[in-house]
Length: 109
Image 1: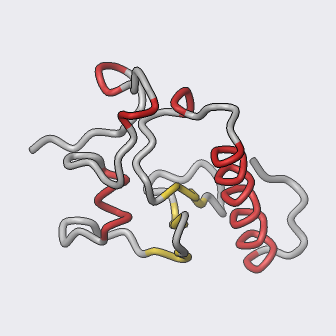
Image 2 (image 1 turned 30 degrees about the vertical axis):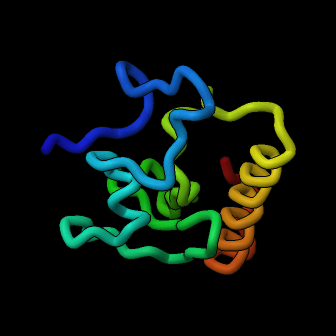
């Protein structure tokens, strides 16, 4: 089965109900579930997100923090309390992780 990144093209969610705990063929879902084919080492995980090094980093410290639940694109997020809390948690985890790894870092995205 061909692996896909879940953004753009035919995989864009048309409605919120297309969210799923995990989706077969999604490279990020395979990382989250710890599939045998995934060689990605998780640096952080909790009940909402996981963090790991980017496979093709564009910076010395390039980490990804992704939700455990499959969200096809950022366009699938809505202005709801749950989505706001999820994104805020993702940002906090990323900042906390960066502060542990590089306490003097001032720039992040």
